[in-house]
Length: 137
Figure 1 (cartoon, one colour):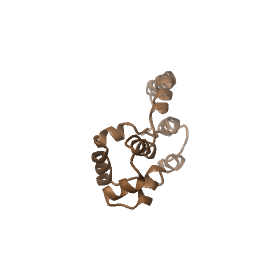
Figure 2 (tube, helix red, strand yellow; figure 1 turned 30 degrees about the horizontal axis):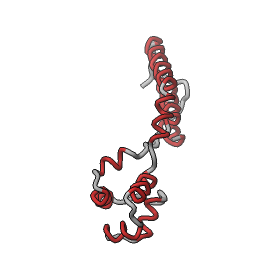
Figure 3 (cartoon, rainbow, N blue to C red; figure 1 turned 90 degrees about the horizontal axis):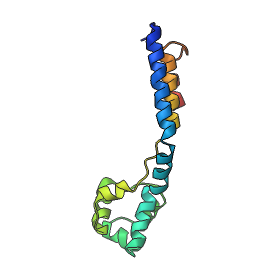
């Protein structure tokens, strides 16, 4: 779909600028969220420390190896959903509480760049195809 009407192109540009301004103004909030959220491994490690448990105890309680618990803490691998629920029960909290502590690793700049490239392709200025956009992600 190529936009031939100049007003459509101007409107798309307006929306892009509006989105970029909103993104720039939210830098303080993004920074605060980044500082308060942790990885899943860091959250699990914090709970083990808080409740004075050992990796061996957690592993035996869940029926997994100590190495598996170690990999979860080091973010080498993630626990399965059933193991995450079992961990939450072991700590006496909900699985949702664990997940709320985890930072969501979104690369907003990558999304904005993809949006700009997509808009350029839509209005016909770039002459690119969807494959080249997806390759840049």
